[in-house]
Image 1 (cartoon, helix red, strand yellow):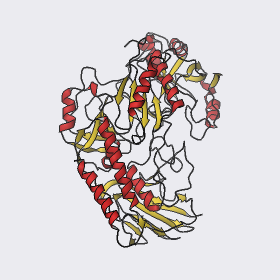
Image 2 (cartoon, rainbow over the protein chains, first blue to last red; image 1 turned 120 degrees about the horizontal axis):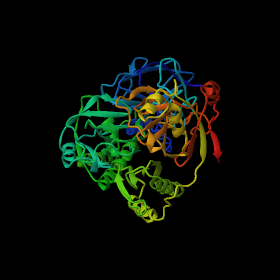
Image 3 (cartoon, each protein chain N blue to C red; image 1 turned 180 degrees about the vertical axis):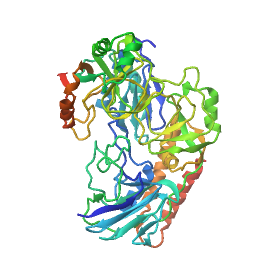
Image 4 (cartoon, chains in turn yellow, purple; image 1 turned 120 degrees about the vertical axis):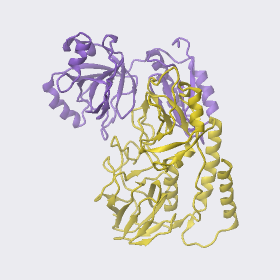
Length: 338
Length: 243
């Protein structure tokens, strides 16, 4: 059987797919790719459905050897140089790697999380319906843990069908403030706190991992109702504010419930951009209402689908005019939101 | 907020979720309504629905913003609210063995002393009620219970312990808990159970669910090894009294 053997990996390298849903009622958080768009992109370039399990690299890179047959791999997300037996691979392209060859994923030059997808996916047994590792609880992944040297990951395909693919142009890099919808507990904060969140810069602190990002910046003051609530559900992207007033944005490996008020929630489409921010990155927030957040999600999803539709066989020269038009439209959508 | 005249609030959770809040207190009638709405949504599964997370007093509903008709959902819930039964439905009842005190319950003596009780009086008070499972939350299998005798309610510790083992039986404020996994905790540890509320790979992976009842059975410390081995091998060890 074709496999990838891990020769070296950073400490938080893990298998992640679109996440584990339906189990939060038992205390099991969704886990899943921190940057679901980059996961989808890596998979699309490998010819896979968007949520197929891939290897998530966090800042550090790694090395893997293909054994037993060829494998088609692709990488998207944080900017990492990929080399096959020392030869650099074009970015946003899949490449067929042969038995005995080594894939080297360099440390991220910018961004945090990169995804190495393999055509057909990994032959791993899902835990509670998902391959995603939840790091703190040991649910999912390979034997409930992060990847390390010596691990052998079997592939579903003995050899890939079809051909290598490429995305002709880089996905547009988003910019501008992180958009949030107030709630679920914005009524636990003073009007000043809401203004502070909307008007002041924050910085991603060193306490940033798959569970959440702790921010540095002005404190957000709780109102007369205090800072304890009877524990309720925590959505992905919730900005939780404990007694010290410093916001913590809860992410894929978060706890499912909590007893601190949550002032606002980062909209789904800005989460991939948020999680790619390294410690020290400055952030601003902008408040939008729920309806606007849904409109953004629909417009951005349509633009992302158009981008995916431009993927074609690698090495194919030139574009036709309809694709160029499609790319311009995407840029238009992205620009319109600033 | 009166439990007799339910008023729900829809608390936005970004574009992909909403919390339907029935009240702000720990109250069996609120919990019953949460679970009743949860059951209806689970049966109806509107387009774009992903999952719902029942907690003490609210239901967080998670959905795909591209496929979910939010306005229709809110109308539907408003129409349902008045008809939700505030009487807790009888759930499954589990008898859970607990080794109290000693190395299993390092806070038993201090907590008893705090309330002017002997350790065995505290054990009697803690093991007397049939607790209601209000929610499973925080981390896998953490089983949050209502029904603690207010006479032994104990504010949480000021200095949480960085590590507590799986299966701790603890109290914090007016709540009682069966811990699911090793975790930091600021609650008072009265005992430990060999029961694994969560065990990956076991069928079922989770023993307890919101709406269940829990009765603690004080169990001699010398039975720990045998029960712990059985639990590690995948046996429930907890006894299901009413299926």
